[in-house]
Image (cartoon, rainbow, N blue to C red; front, side, top):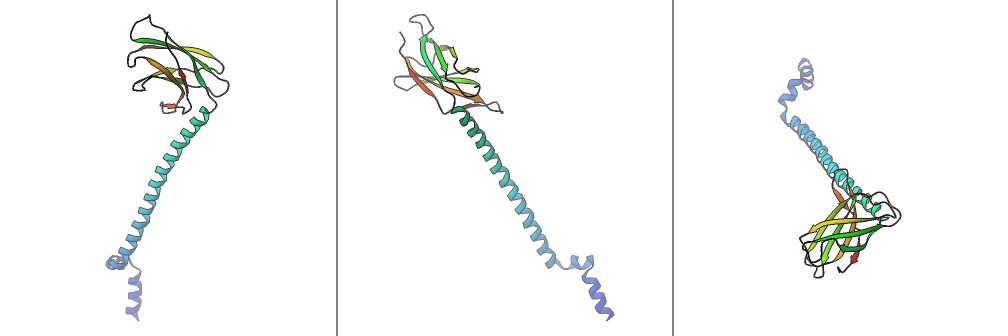
Length: 174
């Protein structure tokens, strides 16, 4: 009976767990699997959360863009006649509504569509206002005849986020 009590006492002692490696390894494997599952779930959560937040920011910008319309009214040659490269003046008009914008991007293309030039004009154009943007010397395109105007916003990270809504205007320089 004394031996039986010692066996029961040894069954709950620290030494018993160290000697019984089979039972201990099953517990360790279970704990490792649980910890691994928690780590994988955390990584997946962080990745999905970042993707969803990034996309929601883009959706917010596009929602702002829906109520903004900036159009080119006229495009004129601000350079002396026959001087190359051409320096363009673009008169822009904004319709009513929408939030303040951080600027517009003006894309010049020629009749062949083979080349283009993008001019970024920072600054807000107030609703119902008209402004003139001077492009400076445009050396990367000749014989431009079409301009596309797209407003943009600057994200919290400082990146330009262009509106997908844009307007086009065809012109002929005289």
